[in-house]
Image (cartoon, rainbow, N blue to C red; front, side, top):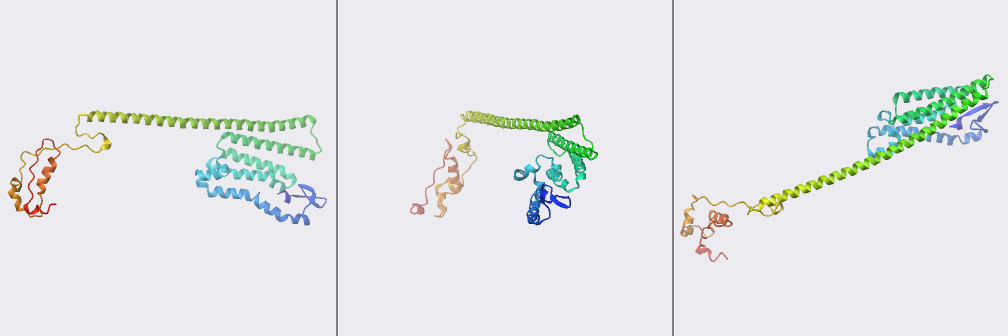
Length: 319
């Protein structure tokens, strides 16, 4: 944006970034298109694209895929201040570029007013998840405010043809240098502390996962032990059971046979083989007779009924 910042000196417009270059001449207009393109790509394009993606995925910030791609834009802030990264971009853009378009005498007062407004936003919204980041950001803004305020005082004194004494000059310079070094030291201390916390968190997480695996293995071993004890008990109970078939996987036990009732009476056609001749040649032994013999076949000591002879007319057809 410095391409558009010019200053008139003795009726001639010069580029503030380089007073060897003139503004609004043929060479300046030749690069105007490139400057406008870069203006839309970086100072305007980057914040615009950032706010676009944040608005688009605002309701899906917790999804892993969105967090991997856009998490660096909002993970440091609370969910109510998801927009603060864009606000910080605009703050830097205003202090480094937009302030230069104001008149020279108004630049430092405008910058100080903007900084006070921005600090008020941080104090009221408290955007960062880690409170130490809020304090660090405020410390940096206070230092910038003091530097601008010092420059404003020096310019005001120079306009009144008044100069600071060497002692005052050294005092102000020392305070500014100490603030700058202090900010750097504070940043290093906070970075080391946060890194240590991250290492401790990962170690605790790994230890918790290891303990969970040990607990799961212990529970599995205990379960297997209980299962083995149950199988042993079942085997002991099954030793005296003649119908036990060896285990749960061998199928259900054989049901105990039931002796027929003493009042069971055979039908008349089964009491005498001669009664069998009343059936046709298509009839084999009657179902009731076969069922009785089949039921008692597996019962030890259960007498089976005598097998009825085949019908004379069936002897040639059985084979």
